[in-house]
Amino acid sequence: MDKDLIRIEFYFPEKKKIKNKRELADLIMEEMREKKSISYSGHIDEEGLKKGLIQHISDGDISGYSVLTEKQKEEVEKVIKETIDKCNKKLPIPTKNYIFIFPFLPAENENVFKGVVGVAQYSCVFHIFLNPNVWTPKALANSVAHELNHTIFYYNHYNDFENYTLLDEIIMEGLAENFRERIVDLEPSPWVMALTKEEAFLILGSLESRLFSKDKDLIKDVLFGNEKYKKWTGYSVGYWLVKEYLNKNPDFLWKEIIKKDSEDFLEKKK
Image (cartoon, rainbow, N blue to C red; front, side, top):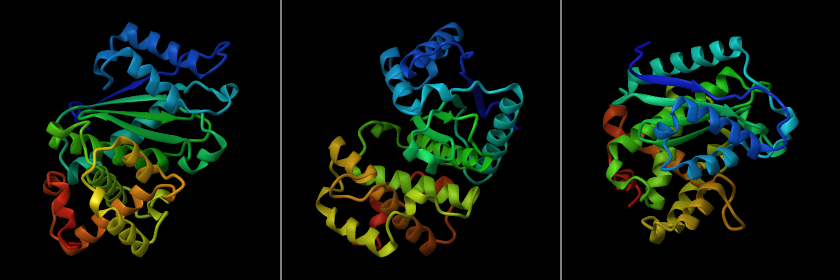
């Protein structure tokens, strides 16, 4: 494992009388201040970091909070390093990635994540939220591959960072899921199976006039679902759109695909 490819940091404060996830987030931030790691956490300021922690720690019972044991940390590091090695062989990592491991308290409706949720924060930073009691190596490897693909996408499309269109977001998720599937696990994720291929392209057609919208609410609704769009709609659309493109271009290289403009993936659907 090339030590220059990644840096892994764990933030699981020692268990004490923590009343809620806000207190847990405060303790995490105290540790990060001491380590001076907030500056490279992928957030502009501490307020943004705390908001992100509170959101992604999630809404499970705080009494279920557990600290990672040293043995578990070693297992987590092993899975991450092995996954990064696999990914790097197919898609060279252009810059060192900082990987933060935080607690995850899954709510009842989040069992689908198998104890692991990932969030790509910046072009070289991603966060993994992990529950020591229910995480699996497979779920962690899948999250690492998915989020790493995002950070490399950000690196190659940095000028548009935080200014992506609906199409950009759909393609980004499609790239990450096809990459994860081909490199780590042949089994499709539940969120990309929310729609059949036929359903996905019907939705894509209905969105044609809004694909270049930068409306954050629209993007959120399409990706995650609302009363109009089924949950995970954007993930499914992106998955099937990118999969069709890759299947029709079998000699593709990931290092080239990741640089393409989002519109390129529409060429067979015009």
